[in-house]
Length: 506
Image 1 (cartoon, rainbow, N blue to C red):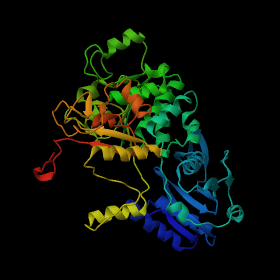
Image 2: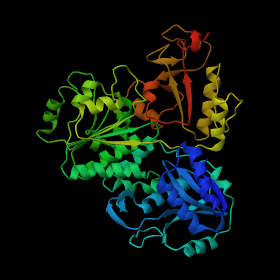
Image 3: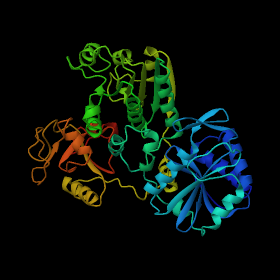
Image 4: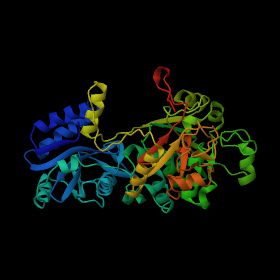
């Protein structure tokens, strides 16, 4: 599994990289990747300094991290021959678009300094060994002797400090939105770098393509598929605000009223008008993809034309909503067809392509750095062996007060905690306590009272931004979608059944 620890660079490093890559991703590395490794190994041959190669960060990998005693050097190596700046944070290198290497390096270093558990101080440099036509604010070297000189200033350390440390990207989506609010008149991709929110290469290229389409006056639909944790919502908000900052008439659209209201509250009143539902089902208050929206829009904005609409959670669209939705010159649909919740939700690739014209498609991937003990844990389960996973807690409580007490301890430690409940015993008001609407007297002798979050405009935003006691209120499963917590208490009810029909005995 990647990353690979190297004590001394020799010709075995290349074959080990290929082997570990296959073990990590289940496929052969590309020819381009193999050639890049061959060249880099030949250039660094003979260097004897502890290092970590191909360290996964978000959906990218840091090429090499040389590990000193109290600091670590992150090296981003490029073998491009011709490089020119194209736009924002994108370069054209040997005829292909790539993320600016300085932006990429800065993002890696920032994430490591913010989120790595080792406490090591990370810094970085670019190693551009084939070109002299690129310059940036990042420290850049072009000769191997320059790298050797840099390493002379460091005392060798233990690479296990990096490999066994945890890289927890623990900023939530709400944290991101509250940060971006203060930066929305700037080049967002660059302005957010110091906060650990740098875009990946794929995200940055999508942002550029959308802005290019707007600038050229094109009519286009972007279809972007990504699974959970791939950064869809982060990119959706970034595209929306980048469009606004460039003067384009833009909308950001959701169906989840709780998520929509959290984003509205976090971004502030001045842009909340441009954050709309794509469907409501309420007569007189049509969503962007519903009949009557054109009349509502004309009453609010006259004959203005919509330049950009960004749809998040588009997998939850009904088919009639998909058909009516492309009201902007440029429309961007983010979807995950593995997260369809209800029978009438039809946001699949097949349906989008059926109803949309001039479609440009992209995929965002979640590439998580899985520690080796976690990988071994999963393998042991699949193979039927006894298993144990350090640093992960899964507990079943027979007493609600015990669970709340444990969650309270986590809260006191500074962890983000939450409660998620099923509707079984109550669909409003009191959910945990006595008396419950269902008549269940499980909590009759308990000194505990937990109520539902009821108002999506006030209570839900306050709960998920940490302004309400997380152990006095509970969210529904639907209301938790799109939000983050580190420890979650789940309260079910009498409809919880095991496979083959076995029920829970209360």
